[in-house]
Amino acid sequence: MSLSAVSSAQEVEARLHETGALLHGHFLLSSGLHSDQYIQCARLLSYPQHAEFAGKALAAACRERGLQPIDVVLGPALGGIVIAHEVARALGVRALFAEREAGALTLRRGFAMSPGERVLIVEDVITTGGSAVETATLAQAHGARIAGYAAIVERGSDHGLQPLCALWRVRPQVFAAEACPLCQAGSPAIKPGSRGPKP
Ligand SMILES: [Zn+2]
Image (cartoon, rainbow, N blue to C red; front, top):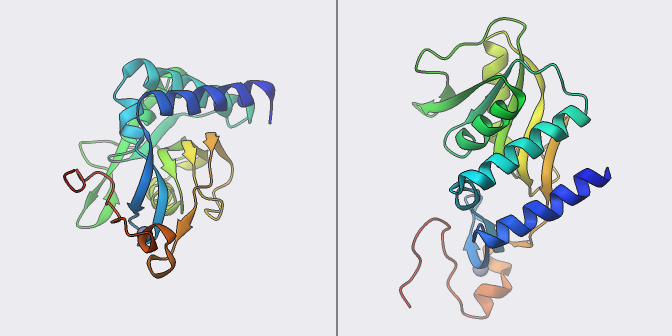
């Protein structure tokens, strides 16, 4: 990892803390697992200056990794929309988003890619990589070629995405519900995004 990558990782972590995007507690993840940490990137991205910073840092990381040329950036809705737009702005290319229709990611609104265009798949957080893979498959179905993947946070290592540029890598502790020490200590698991129990 280069010096600039190390300093941007520290900067991103600080900004995630500062904006309340890094939550500590007891969370029920969409996978069904429990965790003591949750990252809500929407809170970071709700500040345009932080979104711009993350977009510029990811564009720089992609250049450093030699992912260019990149003709278009594509992010899955909703998490990928804002950061895909900021990365595209920094790269000087257009930003598209894919959205679910009848359960499957699709390009709507007249969005299109030309055959042979090199696309960068951008997400806010990558854990299993499932939606990034689905987004890449969609781009390939439109004739595009995958230049690579980019995410603000990489919070899992088994996604198999290659090459992937991430600003911050974190490995939160996750537990099966029946073996969760936080449950055993008597606290309720909160679904992220919900308001949680009233105090
Ligand atoms: Zn638990």
